[in-house]
Image (cartoon, rainbow, N blue to C red; front, side, top):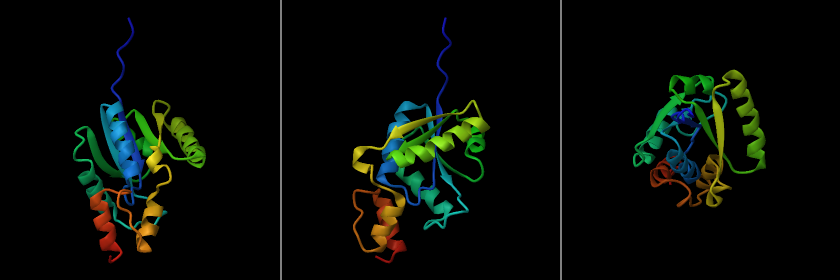
Length: 165
């Protein structure tokens, strides 16, 4: 008799500065595949963020409220260590283009080396969001452009406030 499938608990890490509808699309799709999905906001000391970690966590929590199996947290240090602390056995990553894949493959292989029991799954970006990045959104807003439909409403409002629009 085959063993029952293990409970899938996934971590979806990122800086989410800010969260976009592309991120949200992956969260929604990922939440349908796993028992529990933890959106993990990275405290990246190598990047200057527009929003503080606390602001990003607050925004992401607001955006994912409709999804009962989605939690939000933040971390610094090794992703695989945070994933283990949260009881995760899967890292969920989004891929927009070949260039994303090359970087994500390196990260997945290093994570496997650090914690062989941790798997990584890649989801392709939805075609409507395959060009979208947080940096692009910030640039468009900083130049007075409209990002309606590219980010959740709460993000659009926060971006306008940050850039004085």
